Image 1: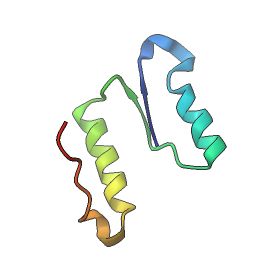
Image 2: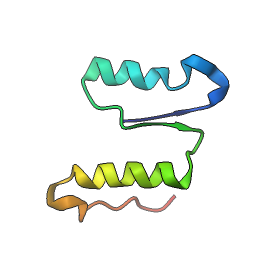
Image 3: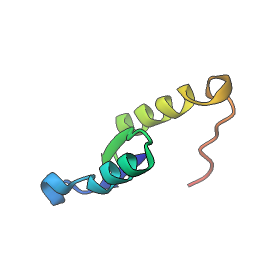
Length: 64
């Protein structure tokens, strides 16, 4: 899972992501400040693709 928010929240930044990941036993891949940087998004995309069958060749982010 990916949590997003604002650094404005200090130590509570991404806190919901920690709680959800813990409760549902899923990995917290990243915490993004707002929409994240290009680098953040590339990192998440690489993680998703590396965890899909076939090396991620079937995943398409779609239109935003």
